[in-house]
Image (cartoon, rainbow, N blue to C red; front, side, top):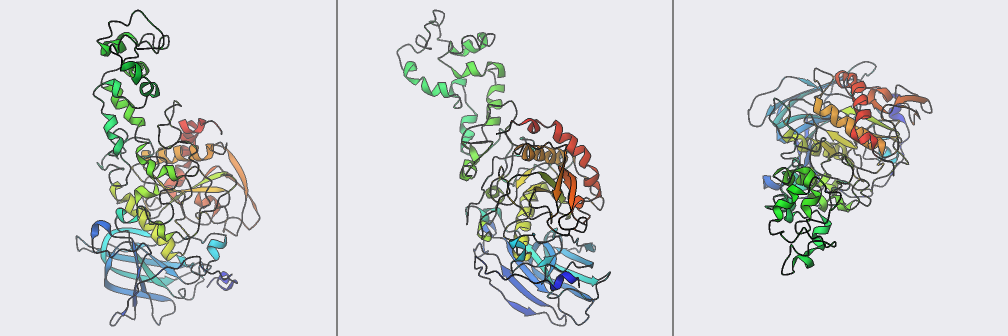
Length: 551
């Protein structure tokens, strides 16, 4: 085992109590102990429509100190799997492979490798007694049986102590909403990273279908009604229109249309024709067509059908105000209830909030901690499969949250953001998307950065899509722009731990948008995604979010 395995660990009394429903069964002839662990969100799980995320484990016992094998074994339903061990300071060297049986197809997959490279945070969070060492989790889709083999390699002469298989059922997103401490904090909107429907060519999958992020202009929230006004005068977004009802109540609404008595207005019986004559000079007499007032703000959009379709594009923001408005400071969208349509470009990329992807906030015990500033963004991949539907993205993120808390023993999900192959952006660790929330993603450099993880494996043949690369670029440009950082620049940071690339206290000069492997000894974010980082940095520099004015 690694010498780090004997380091002194600081005991800490957990600030929460998780009630675990555990059943222990010794599988005949296998020497394997099965333990079922239910997450803290509660719920019977009897109704699939409100099933909470759950963690199930199989203890990998055996007499061979260098190898553990699990024969094909029936299990409870799971969709994400990994292996973990007792001491997080042990950097396991070896191989871990699994095969799973599809719950619907009944067929077994080929052997798949589990990746290593997760490291507990270099803070008190990483020193908690509940923290375990673990592999990266692998998304396998709904499965009901598993086979595994773990072999020590390199300098290792034995597998880690208390080795076990961790299987996560992500549950249903409805089960995670509105529970615990501030679910959805900081979500600033719905949709994909481009602020519009995200459908990956060739897949036909809408990235926002089940993730809670509906396409712009097609939001099914309560604001949908105002999005289909039969007449421009119904437009609710124009403040003057709501201040003019008194004049419009007069016997001749078209005779008292504006504060300025214009003689050309008496024949306003046909207000719908005014916008067509006014667009040429809307800035000269914005109050002239007061009977319909709103159209004077819309003439440049063409008062025909394009106007209603254009306006809703900025309307979906009010819809998710139930979550975003809980944000103590919604930087780019202060009110949370009105569209930030003042600037030419959106104030922030569309981000699916924690509440919308179904985060179980009861898992999060402690409040988030914050950095002074965000000096860099580290790009990661989840090292799972690329064979997922974008409709499954929310479930994958829920599974990773449960894995990071129940398996790794961290306080919350490690990454600050996720992006899927359709370009949809998801809020990660709670605390506010526009705040410098300290994550647990890049050991040694968590104190300076935000972490963005792309769902999928980009080391073994996967290729990042154009939508995903643009979403990472826009998100990084926006996040760095909040702190006045150039996304195409370099920054010098001090390593807060021995990362395998830098020693503790060593100065590291890095790109402000870097790959995980730039700071820590790992293959993450995979060869294909890492080689795309120069392109992503260029796209970030050209992004509309890179020019966001400093506050």
